[in-house]
Length: 106
Picture 1 (tube, rainbow, N blue to C red):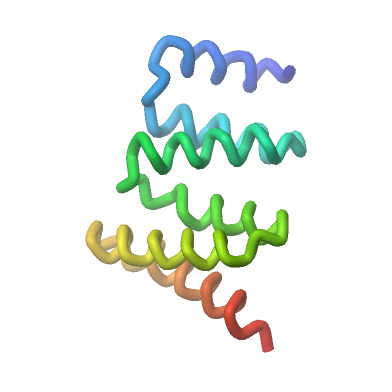
Picture 2: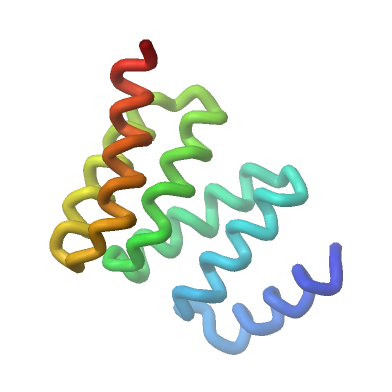
């Protein structure tokens, strides 16, 4: 386990519902190729803080990598709605682009 991963794990133990820590752990696990743990942390984050806009793009991409295309599409659509509600046009645009590429790859 990397030092950064150990540090994030300690932060998570101290504050298990901290959105930033959950997101950072998901990205860290994804970075070292532990996709099962990455998926686990992304889904925990989505449940704990459904308004954390950054979750949806990365979770959708992870679903795409695992060829779970229906889950990716659903995740992108949920993220588009959440980002619309949050007024985050940048995130909404990224999610719409990811969805478009998935539904119409031509």
